[in-house]
Image (cartoon, rainbow over all chains, first blue to last red; front, side):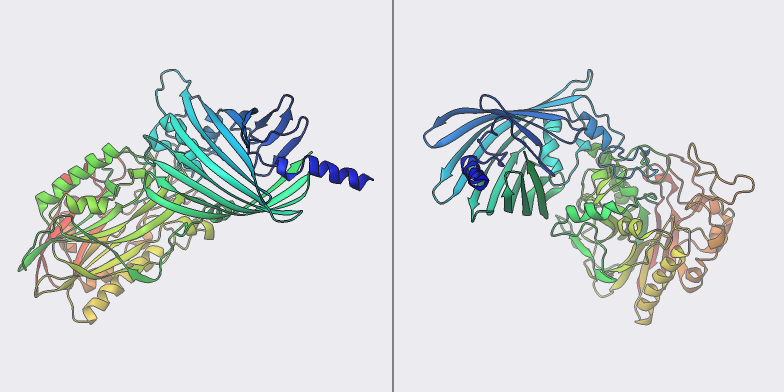
Length: 259
Length: 362
């Protein structure tokens, strides 16, 4: 009997409801929580909405996602996010508390720069559609703005960028004020436990020395049950940096837990 | 001299793997490999000459006397582009004024965050009368995980009015006084050799920059390797002009200890009962290491001249100190120099002074 209940539960809030898919328009059911090694803590709220919080306490970030009215076969949602990067960026100037030349190990931003109080706001629209053959496609697009809160500081110095994949496009908004982001992901179920995920993100960074960044990942997903799944595969970064264009390919692994 | 402090932690390896791309995180170089070739945007033909002018200059990656943290007592890391362009303009002006035919440059940045990612090799080619260049990096890394340095590519450059070929980069031994991980991210010094195709009279140009801060015998190995490459050119019956920043004082230098002169705020050396010297500032144990070069080859500033006019041939002072106090830069040949000069008037353009001389072509 318990098995039957489990199966019914699995089917009723199973993978097509995308409980695990933070990037889709699907909202976590009320009371459900999810967290991953490399993904934020998410919690389902009442009235078709959810919040997520960045686990990295030095870069506090909170986002709110809420359902919108469905149009044709597309489920829609919007997401709003607020991020405070100042503590993290200051920490990156001296992660081990050393001074310049001691050497200041692991410092990714030179300590000569002043990191002001800053806040960024990101808003995006998400659309998700079930496709024939156990597949889901999600499209999203948004815009990010940043504001400097410190009095007397107009702009974060452009020389303080971290010219590395992942870092550069995500911090670009603090140097340039605005970043556009668009992307999609495609999830296909192969069997009861196995599926694969292909996605891409495109960052457009007007007025930046590196004008665009493209990220793509391909992941094999093993979903044990509602409480655990693992993802492994690769992530490709290609984009423009202040020194020119470059591509990086890295292995990816994430372990995600839900309850 | 260049950044002396670097990192050492195992998690760097993890980070290295994490951001690996098609290019290696750090270029470790082969023992011998081809140099990177450059060409000016506008090439002007030069005919053969009976005598040519050769100059060597450590240009401190085009930051003049700005207070860079890595080679003195400064607190700057990432310089502004306009500061670098300004310093490069001054360098180019001096180079055009001296009008050498062959220029051996050290500490040339071609893609470093600290100098605004300016390709200084191409910039200098396009803003002077040179036509061709050969470059050999001594430090090429996608990221230096210390002090916010970021991406680095800096090295030796030969500029020539005549076409260069057979340009090779010879790897010099790595410092022997560092742990493996620090060594991995640290400088990989080299000797750069290229054949200058002056019509009817080809010859070799050789450029090097020896270690500054090694506390063991790495510098001796660098000088020995440099000499062995010159010996190889001679053994094949060829002629060469060679030089660079050898980070070594002449054997008849009157002073060998600069620890207190180079001391930064908060540092202390020569405390009673403690044997401590500043890295790169104490030359007494290595005072004879240039003797072999002086015995085998001709220096643009011969030892006897240096002995008599020592202060006029100093080529270096640390940081913003504008009182030159030691000679580290040299020109060598297996034939003859004349009119050897130490251009101390260029003191504000770098922390090193250019040395030039005329060379009779054989």
